[in-house]
Amino acid sequence: MFDDIDKIQFLLIAAGVIFAFWARKCFRPKTWISIAKNGNALTPVAYMDYERPGDAPEMHLTHDGINKPVARILNEGEKERPEVWMFDGELDDDSQNEYRLRGFIDEKGIIYKQNTRGQEPKAIGYTARPSSPNNPTIRGERYWTSFWLDSELLAFSGAPNPNDEDPFRRRVAEAHLSGVCIRDKRCVSTEAKACTAALFYRLYGPKEEQSTIYKDPAYGWRDTALFTSIVYSILFLLLYFVYACIFNKPLLGNDWQAVIILSACYFGLWAIIRQIKINGIENGESFQPQLDLLNKSIGHRKTDYIITGLAVLCTYFAFNYYDFDFLPLIFAISFGISRNKMNKSSLKPWTIIANYDEEHNDIDEDNEPKEFTQLTPPSGNVSKTFSWHLDKHLNKNITGNITLGFNLDDLNIEREENPHFMQRKNKNKQDSINYMIKKMLGNKEMMERSFYIASYIKHESRIAHLDEMETLQFALDFVQEPNIAFVQSKDSKSIQFAVDYMRYPDETLYDQEGDSGCKSLLAAMLLHNMGYNVLLLSSEKYQHSAIGIEFSQNSWIGRYYSKEDIQGNLSSIEFNHRTFLYCETTNDGFQIGHIIPDMRIDDFETKVELLVSAEEDGEDEVFE
Image (tube, rainbow, N blue to C red; front, side, top):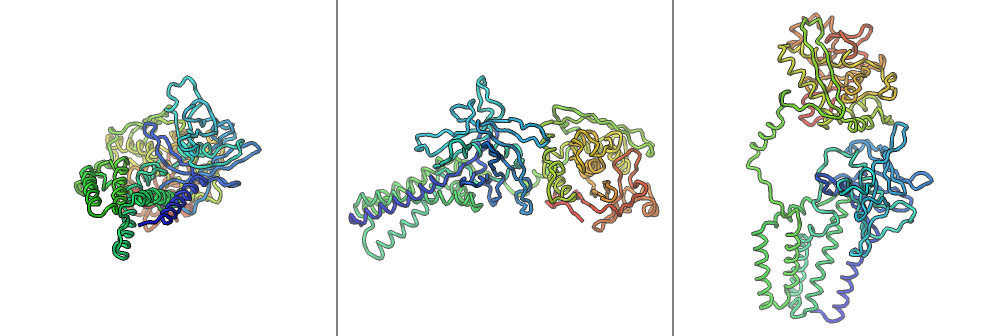
């Protein structure tokens, strides 16, 4: 097939292509970031861009379709102190592009959490090499097996402790830099910056992890071996067709050198396809799900045996009838199959569901609301007890008493992520309320206490044989004084006397105080969890907030009030062609439908509706 000149030219071209892709990888390095989860096992979640001089490196999630950086690392101050600014908002919302300072790492490798309340930054972790986990450093560990091109550095929580028998149980993240990274030795390394970003991502990143688009490390090789065999086979057969059908010549004949050269082309093609996979991950155009599907489809043991047996038969026929023509093809197929058998994701068996209806029924059963007696009380390192009475005008002596646990670390994080505490720029009150409600509806932990209280109120109401009107008043009494004290935010020490600060319900419950906005948001979430459509009302004119409960003329309200009373003596408002009855949440004694004297419900210009079906149907809140 080949003469000597052709062989040399072909070999040089193949070597040049392989070297070009290798050099591109080495001199344009990427830092791959993994986070320790589930028994301290490392899970790949992100990568960091190549750090150009004068630019801020960015941390990108390796999730399908998401290109927005979740963290940026800026070098600030006279000393080298890379600061981590985490993205603050919804990743899939293009309208929000705000970042918030979370912390930094110093030149010794100590990671500090930024305290936004004017206090000194707090040391929460450090970076160290795998071989010396108790010696903080900003320099990653390099290995001779990779020609010192790869560098590995770990992030640990807490402080270095030489007496710790297993410091790796405190491992938080790993940064793996692959390639040549030339930097000033006085500066913090790229892998140290990546570890710092990973630690803060674990603290402040999305709680619900999105689907990861690859099973093995993004820089791995095995998952592309089988696909490379398929592409190689197509190209090889096209080449064979040209020689056999057009030139009427054998492709290789008995030339062993040609066999070796064409077989080596497989590895060059493998490097190219692997690089295409990595570029797709970085640009949000990954074909990894299809790649995993291909690998798993061939990953059955019987199929592997059949393919291996056919490869042996092909080898026999190739030697006897076609000389060496098909040996590179047989090698490529056999090699791809063997690499795929070592790929973890391809070895996992398929999960088969009998039918859709069976699966749907199981989901409905899991999501069915539990009775209060089946619920586990919220736990924490601090307990708060609440005690309140049903209003006297209903002539029923009912007392509620409930104890809730709070985790102070979680509560502090919740406070720091409060949009009012963060003083978001260009965010009006309605946008902040929208953000808070959307976040709570998507976070079961933030809804846990309000759901537990709502279940308790319904449980106690059934035992006491309260009707619907009395149950609603019992829930309203919970947020009114004296159970939850009415305190203006500017007079509240627990929130550092912040002005116009609306607490999350957990904050209001822990502080056992709040202004009208805080108490109204708590009441809205309680009634929402009890199954009512609620309207959150706010007035700039009165600097006051309240709620509305949807009702119809033939519902619970008709047992207590006539149509004339509802129209004349009670405060109600029309919204989206439905009627809501005003409810005051501040002082004790306010009944459903009664408004503070000299106030008009029409002056409440901000309205946020919580539909009970919104969470189930996947809709957002409705605003006016």
